[in-house]
Structures are given as C-alpha cells and as structure tokens.
Length: 228
Image 1 (tube, rainbow, N blue to C red):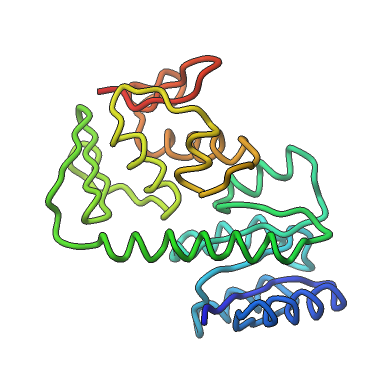
Image 2 (image 1 turned 90 degrees about the vertical axis):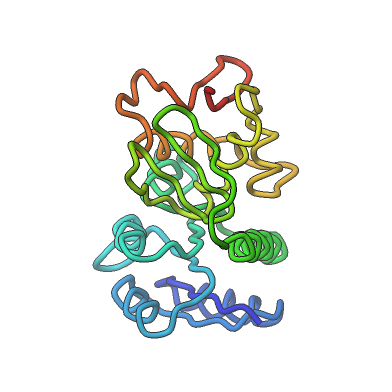
C-alpha cells in the first residue's frame, strides 16, 4: 500500500478526498495547513504529496518550495485555480503535476500509480554507475541516478531526471511534447505545459545561459532535443 499526504484546508474536500483515496487502496494522511504537512512529511514520509495552493498561513507554493529543499517526493498540485499563471507557478515551485478541482478520483489515482511505477523504476536502476551519457560538460548516469555538470553533482527531481534521461537516450533527436508526456509521465493525453515547465527548470540547473541553451535545445514547432 502506498501512503499519500493530503494538504487541504477545506474540511469537506479533505475528508471526502481522503476517504476516496483510501477506497482506491491508499493510506492517506490528511492535514489542513502547510506547516502541519511539512512536519508530517518529516516525521512520517509519504510516497506522494497532494497540495492545495490556497492554504491559510503558508501557501501551497511555499510549501512545495520547502519540500523540494530536502525531499524529491512526487508532488501533485490539487487546486481550484486553473489560471495558467497559477498552474505554471505551482510547477515551477517544484510540483510534478497538477489536477483541477473538482477532482476525478479515478484520474488522480491513475496519476499516483504512474508516479509509483516511475519511482520503482528509478529505485531499480539505482545501481553503481555503468553507462555515462556525455554531452560536453554535462554527464548523465542513468543506472546511478546521477547528473553532473563540470564534474559537480546536479540536484534534480525524479521527474526531471526521467525527462533528461529520455532525451539523452535519443541524442540529437527531436522529441515532441506529446512523446515526452507519454514516455516520462505515462500520459497518453496531458497538458504540454508540464513538459515546458520541467524543461525550463532543467535549463536553470544544466545551462550556463538559459537564454541561449547549449544542451537542452528547443526546435520551434517540433519539440526538444539534447544536443550531442
């Protein structure tokens, strides 16, 4: 059984969503504030975290940023705010995905299962480094779960690492946003903004100049490629 931490201040939504997730087979810990959620995650780490953006006190954006300082747990934003700016801001804060309220629990459970499969695959691959994929001063070690730039380790989330590995396994080949959604997130249909925001986050970590990227290149109208 996977454990899910739900951070939601609306009592009705928190109770109903927690019960629905438990019906789907998840052990659910539900709290009303970001502060409670961060403390809960420190004491009893969950396998995934669901965060509302509009929380009393510390908001969901800051909650995600604080989580990301020490934890690469998969994070899904669950919010009634469907404005593009809010969605992108949540992803840029460090979320892996988002769903809009009212939540379709079956869809949410499917996304959680996909995240769990990705996490298992990453754990299985975390063996001593064998393959080193080199792109100039950028090195990717898929089996070890490592990224290095100028020889120094780069901290990336699980989703960022999977995205980088997918591109690295097809050097110089353009992959469309839909291909990346399918291969990295395992979504046959999804919001392509997920790809764009994660690419942007990766560029801030692996590019010396994000305005003129040398490694992770946009091919206008087609998608992205990792430049050999």
